[in-house]
Each structure stands twice: as C-alpha cells, then as structure tokens.
Image (cartoon, rainbow, N blue to C red; front, top):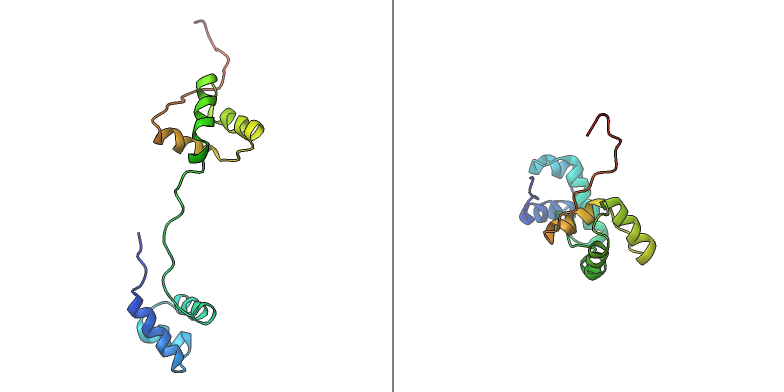
Length: 125
C-alpha cells in the first residue's frame, strides 16, 4: 500500500508556493506529480495547510449498538439468510445496513449463518 509523502516535503512545496512559484514548477522542482502539487496547493489555500489526510476507511461496526436486537433475531429465527436478516432489521427496527456489514458482524462475533436458498432436486434422493 502506498504511503503519503512526508510532511517536510509538503512544507517545502508550500514555502515555494508562498515565494511565488507555480504548482507545476514546484512539482517539477521537488519531483512529485503535478496533480499532487495542485491538490496540495488547493488545500493550502483553502484550509491553510497541506497535511496528509487519514488513510483507510471507518471500520467500526454500525451494528455494535444494535447487537442485542440482531442476536435476538437470529436466536428466535435461526434459519434466516443474511438477506432475510437484513430486510427484517430494516422493516422491524429501521436499521439499514448492507449484507457485508452483517457478514462482518457475525464473523466478529463468531456466529455462523450458512444458509442456501431452497432448490429443486434434479434426481432421486
């Protein structure tokens, strides 16, 4: 995974911008892409700094506060699929989450819900 450029490089680029250099000229001078220099210059003008933004997303569970509701639903109806659990939570509790969110919740809590949709037999049992 790529890492952000150093804060020192960002400060040198903004110092060059303050001195009157263009973003393109500063990019060439410091050996970075023009698009990165332009983004840093825009952030420096609007926010007053060119610091790197946090990497990665928010991986906190949206179901953490609804844990008892989900576990109660699975305990009372253990044969539900993930899609059925998702629609049941949306209809009964107003909890809108994706199927992957449910899967991660069950994986974290070490609960298995391996269900297959009903299918027609093709031959004798």
